[in-house]
Length: 253
Ligand SMILES: NC(=O)C1=CN([C@@H]2O[C@H](COP(=O)(O)OP(=O)(O)OC[C@H]3O[C@@H](n4cnc5c(N)ncnc54)[C@H](OP(=O)(O)O)[C@@H]3O)[C@@H](O)[C@H]2O)C=CC1
Ligand SMILES: O=C(O)C1=N[C@H](C(=O)O)C[C@H](O)C1
Image (cartoon, rainbow, N blue to C red):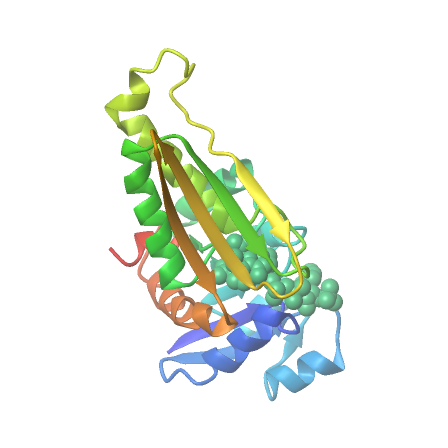
């Protein structure tokens, strides 16, 4: 049985994650981590205890995994504290900096614990990133447009950042860029444009321009249900891993 805790249980994602994880036969929801004792989190969590600090959560409920779904302001300290307490983070929250990601890689390696950073739990988005990385090798002139609901607090999205990183790595490996004297260090910077509007949920387009042509790779999430199978997979996978894995695409082969 995997003992799971969820941080951010009153949030749009956290509440649905709680609802999903309690139905899994191989998982036991042992606690939720909130920033305050709220009546709403008590309703969501049901019989599950609510904690407002990691050390007490760790000591009393002994989770194996923490699913982190809070905000860009909190996520790094939660993930760091979890690793310190021997809890494997599954980080869905966006907004970690490259330095923070490197630090979590270091900490999880030192502690011999799995740590997953999954900017997008949907299978379609993972495929979009893979396809974009392949396309970037042959069509490196590319830009990303990410579009989200107006309640999203951070920009650019975590999905767009990982897409850009995978495309840059792919371009750097390809002969095209390494031969380009205009690129100083061989690292392509893929521009990201962010749109926040009511009516949207989560959408991304990767545009590739070429002589007389345009390739568009697009993914849309129309409901947060699209993330739930990826969350379940990530909780199971983090138990089998050591060190950092960044992206659902690395879990699905
Ligand atoms: N990886 C993925 O596939 C997906 C990732 N996301 C990401 O997940 C994150 C959450 O998104 P969403 O649910 O829409 O956001 P919400 O704003 O709906 O939820 C965030 C929740 O976190 C709570 N919170 C804030 N600080 C703390 C803290 N210190 N401890 C515990 N809880 C805290 C907030 O409480 P309060 O309201 O009281 O401040 C709120 O309930 C975002 O970063 C988003 O980008 C979203 C969708 C998919
Ligand atoms: O805030 C959201 O909604 C989402 N955030 C994630 C991100 O920043 O990429 C994942 C998805 O795009 C939805």
